[in-house]
Amino acid sequence: MSIRIENLTHIYMPNTPMESLALDNVSLEIEDGEFVGLIGQTGSGKSTLIQHFNGLLKPTSGKVIVDGLDLADRGTNLKEIRRRVGLVFQYPEHQLFEETVFADIAFGPRNMGLEGEALEERVREAMEMVGLDYATLKDRSPFDLSGGQMRRVAMAGVLAMKPKTLVLDEPTAGLDPRGRDEILQQIKELHQRFGMTVVLVSHSMEDVARLVDRLLVMHRGKLVLTGTTREVFARAEYLRQLGLGIPQVTELARRLREHCADMRVDILTVEEAHEAIRAFLRQKRGKVHA
Image (cartoon, rainbow, N blue to C red):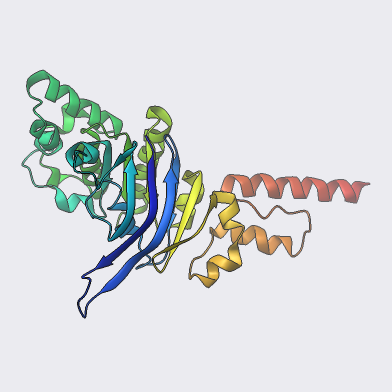
């Protein structure tokens, strides 16, 4: 499924002294099966933008079109749109409220009319998708779990609705390193194993460098830059002007380039840096022996 945004503007509290322009004439398209990152400073409009993807917010002007359906049309079923485009808010564990893991994950499908074996199978599938053992955890209280497990229960509750697109707003915020790595691995697998379209909002340049294929950069309510992850992080100086950084390993490669003209500067991961440095050392040894 695709999400198309056309000339989207959103103003909070219009025609009041508190009026605030959150989105300013934003246009973009997210294709079926993409893994897209959304970055920008706090207040740049990221969270406001993603809440338009499934109709939680309505545009002040402009269009939001999901699977060819204009969300402003009276005939568009927004409940169905919200099933197709699953949104996981920042700190989603704060939305957990049922007594058991099963009940929490089953809440959405049960409201859709699922029950009995069909409901049980839906919950089991969703827990499997996020790496949670059904038999061990289904009867546990979600509030007795670790932070990372609670985050995955909240994700499973969205996945149990079988969305085609998963939108995650800072999914690793507040987690310890182990919890962070677990969540990121689950998100990667959802994209790779199930072909799910994923939109990841993140402040971590390292996370988006490792995971996403394309980046959207927001600044003061505008979409100011888009391109592949390598293309965007190649614009290091421009990103700094926006108050954003680049992955630490990319910065390392840029500094090494000052001492080695052959060093690649489009490096995004530690693995790529390791290989590039090994290649540089092999080349240097070859020149010495020559």
